[in-house]
Image 1 (cartoon, rainbow, N blue to C red):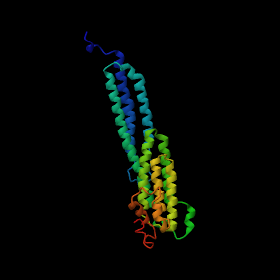
Image 2: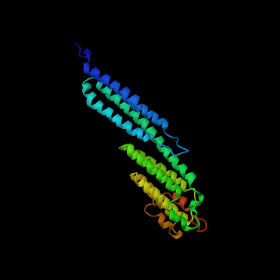
Image 3: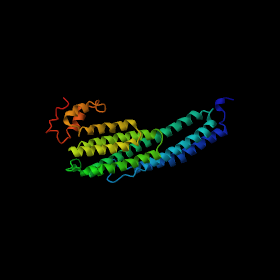
Length: 281
């Protein structure tokens, strides 16, 4: 009898049926369905109220269940089809399911990060006053940070805690790196909108120091480095004019483009009176 026409052993047929049931009822109708619902619930990138990001929880549970599916697949199903033509087909199906799920999760995480960054932008735009960094007396230094900064830090800290609670492994690093980078851009652009007198410069340094402290909890070196440089840039707002060139050549600022350095120097209240336009030439 031609071996190619040999009947499929009953256990191999049953294994295929079990795989189909697992895929349909666990992966597609439970895990994939939950991720789809989670995607729909992610707030827009410019939320008008503080966003509730449930998607991080959804991702955590989806990953746990998919790992369970993969364990059952590897431990119980693969041994039954190991020597059959179905083996490669089963592996291919599992790979397709994983790639589809990862694609949806990546999309959702990117949207969630955008919503968080959007809300931080909203807080800063609504809460930060033009007069915050032009105080007329030093009584404001007693508050340590501006109200806008305090609100942002509280929100960022809660989001970071949520991410650490629900995500694991590479997802945590990728999400916090992207979130930290976007937050840096939002805060950097925000600070460029103000002019700073000497007291205001001290206050913004306190704000950035507080942002930096909260970012340390991310435990992402490249993001912390961004905020270290931002803190160093803000120091240009308080340095006496004669020392500006020397500070710009310091370790933290030496690699930055002159346009970035001048962008901060121009925010000083004494930029014109102290004739700082040519300080780096």
